[in-house]
Image 1: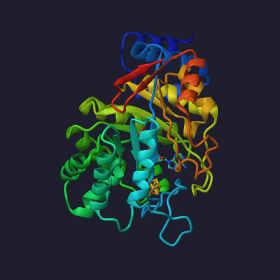
Image 2: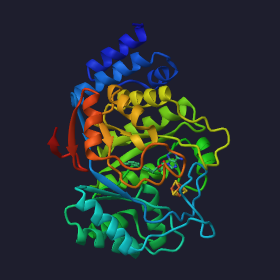
Image 3: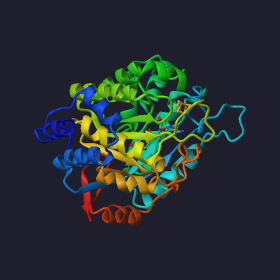
Image 4: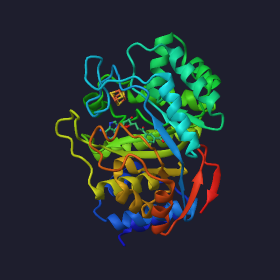
Length: 359
Ligand code: V47
Ligand code: SF4
Protein backbone atom coordinates (compact mmCIF):
# COMPACT_ATOMS: atom_id res chain seq x y z
CA UNK A 1 0.00 0.00 0.00
CA UNK A 2 1.36 3.46 -0.84
CA UNK A 3 2.01 6.07 1.85
CA UNK A 4 -0.95 8.09 0.45
CA UNK A 5 -3.40 5.23 1.02
CA UNK A 6 -1.84 4.36 4.38
CA UNK A 7 -2.38 7.94 5.59
CA UNK A 8 -5.98 7.94 4.43
CA UNK A 9 -6.65 4.62 6.09
CA UNK A 10 -5.29 5.97 9.38
CA UNK A 11 -7.49 9.05 9.05
CA UNK A 12 -10.59 6.95 8.46
CA UNK A 13 -9.80 4.65 11.37
CA UNK A 14 -9.36 7.68 13.63
CA UNK A 15 -12.55 9.31 12.40
CA UNK A 16 -10.50 12.18 10.91
CA UNK A 17 -11.42 14.15 7.83
CA UNK A 18 -9.71 13.96 4.43
CA UNK A 19 -8.71 17.19 2.68
CA UNK A 20 -9.80 18.49 -0.73
CA UNK A 21 -6.33 17.70 -2.11
CA UNK A 22 -6.59 14.15 -0.83
CA UNK A 23 -10.01 13.77 -2.47
CA UNK A 24 -8.50 15.02 -5.73
CA UNK A 25 -5.67 12.52 -5.29
CA UNK A 26 -8.25 9.74 -4.99
CA UNK A 27 -10.06 10.86 -8.15
CA UNK A 28 -6.79 10.74 -10.10
CA UNK A 29 -5.77 7.34 -8.67
CA UNK A 30 -6.38 4.20 -10.72
CA UNK A 31 -6.45 2.00 -7.62
CA UNK A 32 -10.19 1.35 -7.71
CA UNK A 33 -10.03 -1.47 -5.17
CA UNK A 34 -7.87 0.61 -2.83
CA UNK A 35 -10.44 3.42 -2.96
CA UNK A 36 -13.25 0.93 -2.47
CA UNK A 37 -11.53 -0.58 0.56
CA UNK A 38 -11.24 2.85 2.20
CA UNK A 39 -14.89 3.60 1.48
CA UNK A 40 -16.04 0.23 2.78
CA UNK A 41 -14.03 0.88 5.97
CA UNK A 42 -15.61 4.30 6.46
CA UNK A 43 -19.05 2.84 5.82
CA UNK A 44 -18.54 -0.13 8.16
CA UNK A 45 -17.77 2.24 11.02
CA UNK A 46 -21.16 3.90 10.57
CA UNK A 47 -23.46 1.19 9.28
CA UNK A 48 -21.89 -2.24 9.73
CA UNK A 49 -23.34 -4.63 7.16
CA UNK A 50 -26.77 -3.05 7.10
CA UNK A 51 -28.11 -1.65 3.83
CA UNK A 52 -31.24 0.47 3.82
CA UNK A 53 -33.96 0.50 1.19
CA UNK A 54 -37.40 2.00 1.09
CA UNK A 55 -40.70 1.29 -0.58
CA UNK A 56 -41.68 4.40 -2.46
CA UNK A 57 -43.28 5.77 -5.59
CA UNK A 58 -42.25 8.70 -7.74
CA UNK A 59 -44.88 11.08 -9.09
CA UNK A 60 -43.73 13.72 -11.58
CA UNK A 61 -46.81 15.95 -11.69
CA UNK A 62 -45.65 18.03 -14.68
CA UNK A 63 -42.82 18.02 -17.21
CA UNK A 64 -43.47 21.60 -18.30
CA UNK A 65 -40.49 23.68 -17.26
CA UNK A 66 -39.35 27.20 -17.93
CA UNK A 67 -35.71 26.31 -17.24
CA UNK A 68 -34.85 23.78 -19.95
CA UNK A 69 -31.46 22.65 -18.57
CA UNK A 70 -29.35 21.19 -21.39
CA UNK A 71 -28.82 17.86 -19.55
CA UNK A 72 -32.54 17.32 -19.01
CA UNK A 73 -34.54 15.17 -21.44
CA UNK A 74 -37.59 15.19 -19.18
CA UNK A 75 -38.66 18.82 -19.46
CA UNK A 76 -40.84 20.18 -22.26
CA UNK A 77 -42.19 23.52 -23.41
CA UNK A 78 -45.91 24.23 -23.90
CA UNK A 79 -45.57 23.78 -27.69
CA UNK A 80 -43.82 20.42 -27.42
CA UNK A 81 -45.36 17.05 -28.08
CA UNK A 82 -45.45 14.95 -24.94
CA UNK A 83 -45.81 17.81 -22.48
CA UNK A 84 -48.19 17.02 -19.63
CA UNK A 85 -49.55 18.19 -16.31
CA UNK A 86 -51.34 15.58 -14.23
CA UNK A 87 -54.84 16.33 -12.98
CA UNK A 88 -55.27 16.13 -9.22
CA UNK A 89 -57.34 12.95 -9.63
CA UNK A 90 -54.52 11.22 -11.49
CA UNK A 91 -52.06 12.22 -8.79
CA UNK A 92 -54.39 10.88 -6.12
CA UNK A 93 -54.84 7.64 -8.02
CA UNK A 94 -51.07 7.12 -8.22
CA UNK A 95 -50.69 7.91 -4.50
CA UNK A 96 -53.50 5.47 -3.65
CA UNK A 97 -51.81 2.74 -5.73
CA UNK A 98 -48.60 3.39 -3.84
CA UNK A 99 -50.32 3.13 -0.46
CA UNK A 100 -52.04 -0.09 -1.49
CA UNK A 101 -48.67 -1.53 -2.56
CA UNK A 102 -47.19 -0.87 0.88
CA UNK A 103 -45.23 2.30 0.06
CA UNK A 104 -44.23 4.50 2.96
CA UNK A 105 -43.06 7.43 0.84
CA UNK A 106 -44.19 9.40 -2.15
CA UNK A 107 -41.47 11.32 -4.00
CA UNK A 108 -42.99 14.23 -5.94
CA UNK A 109 -41.06 16.64 -8.14
CA UNK A 110 -41.77 18.38 -11.42
CA UNK A 111 -40.61 21.11 -13.77
CA UNK A 112 -41.03 24.82 -13.07
CA UNK A 113 -44.51 25.12 -14.58
CA UNK A 114 -45.07 28.46 -16.35
CA UNK A 115 -48.61 28.99 -15.05
CA UNK A 116 -49.69 26.85 -12.10
CA UNK A 117 -50.24 28.97 -8.99
CA UNK A 118 -48.65 28.12 -5.63
CA UNK A 119 -52.11 27.06 -4.40
CA UNK A 120 -52.00 24.10 -6.81
CA UNK A 121 -49.05 22.64 -4.90
CA UNK A 122 -50.64 23.28 -1.52
CA UNK A 123 -53.86 21.60 -2.65
CA UNK A 124 -51.93 18.67 -4.11
CA UNK A 125 -50.10 18.08 -0.82
CA UNK A 126 -53.24 18.47 1.27
CA UNK A 127 -55.25 16.10 -0.93
CA UNK A 128 -52.52 13.42 -1.01
CA UNK A 129 -52.17 13.64 2.76
CA UNK A 130 -55.92 13.54 3.39
CA UNK A 131 -56.23 10.34 1.34
CA UNK A 132 -53.03 8.71 2.67
CA UNK A 133 -52.29 9.95 6.17
CA UNK A 134 -49.56 7.33 6.70
CA UNK A 135 -47.57 8.22 3.57
CA UNK A 136 -44.55 10.49 4.01
CA UNK A 137 -44.52 13.17 1.31
CA UNK A 138 -40.99 13.98 0.14
CA UNK A 139 -41.35 16.68 -2.47
CA UNK A 140 -39.89 19.71 -4.29
CA UNK A 141 -36.25 20.63 -4.76
CA UNK A 142 -34.60 23.83 -3.56
CA UNK A 143 -35.05 25.04 -7.16
CA UNK A 144 -38.82 24.70 -6.88
CA UNK A 145 -38.90 26.27 -3.43
CA UNK A 146 -37.06 29.31 -4.77
CA UNK A 147 -39.54 29.43 -7.68
CA UNK A 148 -42.54 29.33 -5.32
CA UNK A 149 -41.02 32.20 -3.35
CA UNK A 150 -40.66 34.28 -6.50
CA UNK A 151 -44.19 33.32 -7.68
CA UNK A 152 -45.76 34.48 -4.43
CA UNK A 153 -43.40 37.23 -3.31
CA UNK A 154 -43.03 35.35 -0.02
CA UNK A 155 -39.87 34.48 1.85
CA UNK A 156 -38.43 30.95 1.71
CA UNK A 157 -39.44 30.59 5.39
CA UNK A 158 -43.07 31.44 4.59
CA UNK A 159 -43.20 29.12 1.58
CA UNK A 160 -41.80 26.26 3.65
CA UNK A 161 -44.20 26.92 6.51
CA UNK A 162 -47.21 26.74 4.16
CA UNK A 163 -45.96 23.60 2.42
CA UNK A 164 -45.36 21.90 5.76
CA UNK A 165 -48.79 22.87 6.98
CA UNK A 166 -50.23 21.27 3.82
CA UNK A 167 -48.31 18.00 4.32
CA UNK A 168 -44.70 18.29 3.16
CA UNK A 169 -42.55 15.92 5.23
CA UNK A 170 -39.05 16.36 3.74
CA UNK A 171 -37.30 17.28 0.52
CA UNK A 172 -35.30 15.30 -2.03
CA UNK A 173 -31.85 16.45 -3.12
CA UNK A 174 -32.34 17.40 -6.76
CA UNK A 175 -31.35 20.61 -8.50
CA UNK A 176 -27.86 20.68 -7.01
CA UNK A 177 -26.25 19.46 -10.26
CA UNK A 178 -22.69 20.91 -10.04
CA UNK A 179 -22.33 24.05 -7.95
CA UNK A 180 -19.24 25.49 -9.73
CA UNK A 181 -20.48 28.37 -11.86
CA UNK A 182 -18.39 27.72 -15.01
CA UNK A 183 -19.92 24.28 -15.63
CA UNK A 184 -23.32 25.23 -14.19
CA UNK A 185 -23.56 28.07 -16.71
CA UNK A 186 -23.12 25.53 -19.52
CA UNK A 187 -25.48 22.79 -18.32
CA UNK A 188 -28.26 24.81 -16.66
CA UNK A 189 -27.82 28.53 -17.36
CA UNK A 190 -31.33 29.41 -16.22
CA UNK A 191 -31.34 27.45 -13.00
CA UNK A 192 -30.64 29.16 -9.66
CA UNK A 193 -26.94 29.38 -8.85
CA UNK A 194 -25.13 26.84 -6.71
CA UNK A 195 -24.85 29.49 -4.00
CA UNK A 196 -28.63 30.04 -4.05
CA UNK A 197 -29.30 26.28 -3.90
CA UNK A 198 -27.14 26.09 -0.77
CA UNK A 199 -28.73 29.20 0.72
CA UNK A 200 -32.31 27.92 0.19
CA UNK A 201 -31.32 24.52 1.57
CA UNK A 202 -29.79 26.11 4.65
CA UNK A 203 -33.06 27.94 5.34
CA UNK A 204 -35.03 24.73 4.83
CA UNK A 205 -32.77 22.89 7.30
CA UNK A 206 -33.06 25.69 9.84
CA UNK A 207 -36.84 25.47 9.56
CA UNK A 208 -36.53 21.86 10.75
CA UNK A 209 -37.03 19.93 7.52
CA UNK A 210 -34.57 17.26 6.42
CA UNK A 211 -33.38 17.12 2.82
CA UNK A 212 -31.03 15.09 0.65
CA UNK A 213 -28.26 16.33 -1.60
CA UNK A 214 -27.34 15.17 -5.10
CA UNK A 215 -24.51 15.73 -7.56
CA UNK A 216 -24.97 15.24 -11.30
CA UNK A 217 -21.69 13.90 -12.66
CA UNK A 218 -20.23 12.66 -15.93
CA UNK A 219 -20.99 15.64 -18.20
CA UNK A 220 -18.53 18.55 -18.50
CA UNK A 221 -17.26 18.79 -14.92
CA UNK A 222 -13.63 18.23 -13.90
CA UNK A 223 -12.63 16.30 -10.79
CA UNK A 224 -11.93 19.64 -9.09
CA UNK A 225 -15.59 20.63 -9.68
CA UNK A 226 -16.76 17.43 -8.00
CA UNK A 227 -14.51 18.05 -5.02
CA UNK A 228 -15.72 21.66 -4.82
CA UNK A 229 -19.31 20.35 -4.82
CA UNK A 230 -18.60 17.84 -2.06
CA UNK A 231 -16.73 20.46 -0.07
CA UNK A 232 -19.65 22.91 -0.09
CA UNK A 233 -22.02 20.14 1.00
CA UNK A 234 -19.73 19.03 3.84
CA UNK A 235 -19.50 22.62 4.97
CA UNK A 236 -23.28 23.16 5.01
CA UNK A 237 -23.80 19.83 6.76
CA UNK A 238 -21.37 20.96 9.49
CA UNK A 239 -23.54 24.03 9.99
CA UNK A 240 -27.04 22.48 9.90
CA UNK A 241 -26.88 18.67 10.09
CA UNK A 242 -30.00 18.75 7.90
CA UNK A 243 -28.87 16.38 5.13
CA UNK A 244 -29.89 12.75 5.37
CA UNK A 245 -28.35 11.19 2.28
CA UNK A 246 -25.98 12.09 -0.52
CA UNK A 247 -26.88 10.72 -3.96
CA UNK A 248 -24.44 10.98 -6.85
CA UNK A 249 -26.51 10.94 -10.08
CA UNK A 250 -24.79 9.43 -13.12
CA UNK A 251 -25.50 11.53 -16.21
CA UNK A 252 -27.68 9.82 -18.87
CA UNK A 253 -26.94 11.36 -22.27
CA UNK A 254 -29.80 10.39 -24.63
CA UNK A 255 -32.05 13.19 -25.90
CA UNK A 256 -29.98 15.78 -24.06
CA UNK A 257 -28.10 18.81 -25.39
CA UNK A 258 -24.72 18.87 -23.65
CA UNK A 259 -22.04 18.98 -26.37
CA UNK A 260 -18.93 17.06 -25.38
CA UNK A 261 -20.47 15.32 -22.35
CA UNK A 262 -18.39 12.36 -21.25
CA UNK A 263 -20.94 9.94 -19.78
CA UNK A 264 -20.28 7.65 -16.83
CA UNK A 265 -18.57 4.27 -16.99
CA UNK A 266 -18.69 1.66 -14.23
CA UNK A 267 -15.28 2.58 -12.81
CA UNK A 268 -16.10 6.28 -12.62
CA UNK A 269 -19.46 5.55 -10.97
CA UNK A 270 -17.91 3.32 -8.29
CA UNK A 271 -15.02 5.70 -7.66
CA UNK A 272 -17.37 8.66 -7.27
CA UNK A 273 -19.66 6.83 -4.86
CA UNK A 274 -16.66 5.61 -2.84
CA UNK A 275 -14.94 9.00 -2.68
CA UNK A 276 -18.24 10.58 -1.62
CA UNK A 277 -18.39 8.16 1.31
CA UNK A 278 -14.77 8.82 2.29
CA UNK A 279 -14.95 12.63 1.97
CA UNK A 280 -18.44 13.25 3.38
CA UNK A 281 -17.66 12.07 6.89
CA UNK A 282 -20.66 13.99 8.25
CA UNK A 283 -23.23 12.26 6.00
CA UNK A 284 -24.69 9.06 7.47
CA UNK A 285 -26.06 7.74 4.19
CA UNK A 286 -24.63 7.43 0.70
CA UNK A 287 -27.39 6.33 -1.61
CA UNK A 288 -27.08 4.40 -4.88
CA UNK A 289 -29.89 5.46 -7.21
CA UNK A 290 -30.10 2.33 -9.33
CA UNK A 291 -32.21 4.08 -11.96
CA UNK A 292 -29.18 6.07 -13.16
CA UNK A 293 -26.45 3.57 -12.21
CA UNK A 294 -28.08 0.40 -13.48
CA UNK A 295 -28.88 -2.48 -11.12
CA UNK A 296 -25.52 -4.21 -11.42
CA UNK A 297 -23.36 -1.20 -10.58
CA UNK A 298 -25.81 -0.26 -7.80
CA UNK A 299 -25.34 -3.73 -6.30
CA UNK A 300 -21.54 -3.65 -6.59
CA UNK A 301 -21.61 -0.17 -5.02
CA UNK A 302 -22.64 -1.85 -1.75
CA UNK A 303 -18.99 -2.97 -1.49
CA UNK A 304 -17.81 0.59 -2.23
CA UNK A 305 -19.21 2.50 0.74
CA UNK A 306 -22.89 2.70 -0.21
CA UNK A 307 -25.44 1.85 2.51
CA UNK A 308 -28.73 2.88 0.93
CA UNK A 309 -30.56 1.72 -2.17
CA UNK A 310 -33.39 3.81 -3.60
CA UNK A 311 -36.13 2.35 -3.79
CA UNK A 312 -39.11 0.72 -5.52
CA UNK A 313 -39.71 3.97 -7.49
CA UNK A 314 -42.48 2.40 -9.67
CA UNK A 315 -42.69 5.04 -12.40
CA UNK A 316 -39.44 6.79 -13.25
CA UNK A 317 -39.36 9.44 -15.94
CA UNK A 318 -36.35 11.75 -15.55
CA UNK A 319 -33.64 9.13 -16.14
CA UNK A 320 -35.61 7.05 -18.64
CA UNK A 321 -36.42 10.05 -20.85
CA UNK A 322 -32.62 10.42 -21.04
CA UNK A 323 -32.07 6.79 -22.03
CA UNK A 324 -31.49 4.99 -18.70
CA UNK A 325 -31.69 1.27 -19.48
CA UNK A 326 -32.56 0.19 -15.94
CA UNK A 327 -36.10 -1.04 -15.22
CA UNK A 328 -38.73 1.57 -14.29
CA UNK A 329 -39.59 -0.14 -11.04
CA UNK A 330 -38.14 -2.69 -8.68
CA UNK A 331 -40.13 -5.05 -6.45
CA UNK A 332 -39.40 -5.18 -2.74
CA UNK A 333 -38.39 -8.84 -3.08
CA UNK A 334 -35.92 -8.01 -5.84
CA UNK A 335 -34.30 -5.28 -3.73
CA UNK A 336 -33.98 -7.61 -0.76
CA UNK A 337 -32.43 -10.34 -2.94
CA UNK A 338 -30.03 -7.88 -4.52
CA UNK A 339 -28.79 -6.71 -1.11
CA UNK A 340 -28.57 -10.23 0.30
CA UNK A 341 -26.57 -11.48 -2.67
CA UNK A 342 -24.08 -8.70 -1.96
CA UNK A 343 -23.56 -10.27 1.49
CA UNK A 344 -25.38 -7.46 3.32
CA UNK A 345 -28.38 -7.23 5.61
CA UNK A 346 -31.42 -5.56 4.01
CA UNK A 347 -33.24 -3.12 6.30
CA UNK A 348 -36.46 -1.47 5.21
CA UNK A 349 -36.54 2.14 6.41
CA UNK A 350 -38.98 5.01 6.28
CA UNK A 351 -38.03 8.38 4.80
CA UNK A 352 -36.52 9.61 8.07
CA UNK A 353 -34.44 6.43 8.46
CA UNK A 354 -36.52 4.85 11.18
CA UNK A 355 -35.99 1.12 10.78
CA UNK A 356 -39.19 -0.69 9.85
CA UNK A 357 -37.92 -4.24 9.37
CA UNK A 358 -34.59 -6.04 9.01
CA UNK A 359 -34.55 -9.10 6.76
O1 V47 B 1 -32.06 17.41 -10.30
C1 V47 B 1 -31.92 15.29 -14.83
C2 V47 B 1 -31.17 14.75 -12.46
C3 V47 B 1 -32.49 15.06 -10.67
C4 V47 B 1 -30.69 13.87 -15.90
O2 V47 B 1 -33.29 12.90 -2.90
C5 V47 B 1 -30.48 13.66 -14.54
O3 V47 B 1 -33.93 10.86 -2.56
C6 V47 B 1 -29.00 11.96 -14.96
O4 V47 B 1 -32.82 14.47 -7.57
N1 V47 B 1 -29.13 12.13 -16.31
C7 V47 B 1 -33.81 14.66 -10.08
N2 V47 B 1 -29.65 12.72 -14.06
C8 V47 B 1 -33.71 13.30 -9.39
C9 V47 B 1 -33.27 13.43 -7.98
C10 V47 B 1 -33.40 12.30 -7.04
C11 V47 B 1 -33.58 11.01 -7.50
C12 V47 B 1 -33.73 9.99 -6.58
C13 V47 B 1 -33.72 10.21 -5.23
C14 V47 B 1 -33.55 11.50 -4.78
C15 V47 B 1 -33.58 11.78 -3.32
C16 V47 B 1 -33.38 12.56 -5.68
O5 V47 B 1 -32.27 14.23 -11.79
C17 V47 B 1 -32.30 16.43 -11.22
C18 V47 B 1 -31.07 16.22 -12.08
O6 V47 B 1 -29.91 16.36 -11.31
N3 V47 B 1 -31.24 14.57 -13.91
N4 V47 B 1 -31.58 14.87 -16.07
C19 V47 B 1 -29.96 13.05 -16.81
N5 V47 B 1 -30.06 13.23 -18.14
FE1 SF4 C 1 -36.54 21.87 -15.46
FE2 SF4 C 1 -35.45 20.38 -13.50
FE3 SF4 C 1 -35.30 19.54 -16.08
FE4 SF4 C 1 -33.87 21.67 -15.29
S1 SF4 C 1 -33.63 19.54 -14.53
S2 SF4 C 1 -35.12 21.53 -17.15
S3 SF4 C 1 -35.25 22.61 -13.78
S4 SF4 C 1 -37.17 19.79 -14.87
